[in-house]
Length: 129
Image 1 (cartoon, rainbow, N blue to C red):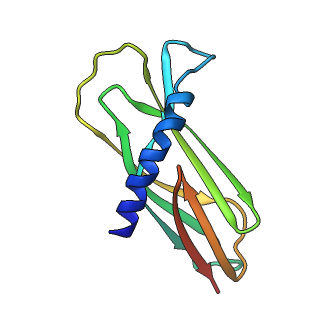
Image 2: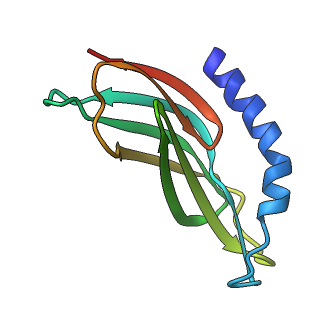
């Protein structure tokens, strides 16, 4: 319940970001914005040193929306993933939501400690031993 509330709050706050981010200077006929993330789960691999992957579920958008790109950055114990979608600016599209599901390897190693993962503003924590 708490994660869904966080996702809803994040989606609301990201609306302002999306409005700014929807222009695409490289192709003015495309709208590029954030994929709506519903859940994020971290899976720790049994390896030495420990490695991790994020299982991400969300909504890509309407029938015209497609995956655009993904970036990943890490600052100390915080990993941030940004997932973008694209759609034609003036297209008339089916209003059937397309699901987004991905398993994303987290770059680098994860020695024992506590970490934060943010995917399009949805946050979760994980630990390695």
